[in-house]
Amino acid sequence: HRDIEVQNGVVHYIDCVLLPKQLMLPTRRTLISYISSRAELSMFYNALRGTALMERLEQRDFEEPLTIFAPNNDAFIRFISMYPALYIDTFEERWANPDSP
Image: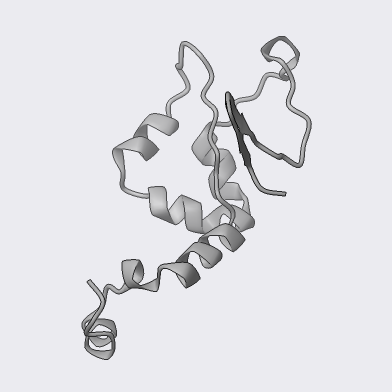
């Protein structure tokens, strides 16, 4: 299922049950420690590496918990296949794709 836009918002399909804050179990994990431990999120983790956002997500002292919509590797692969010009970074790739920005 995809996210469905409606007149007054968006319906996000998810594959798990979300618990209210009162029912959340205590944990010492940070968002980044969880994301980095999941193989299916490795491309998302690599995209975050070295960013200010990653530093913020490593913190444990949020006043309110954060929600992260983390695209899995399949989502990154689909995106890259749709927009390959965004991922040309080496001289060889630019030489082979001269019309890409």
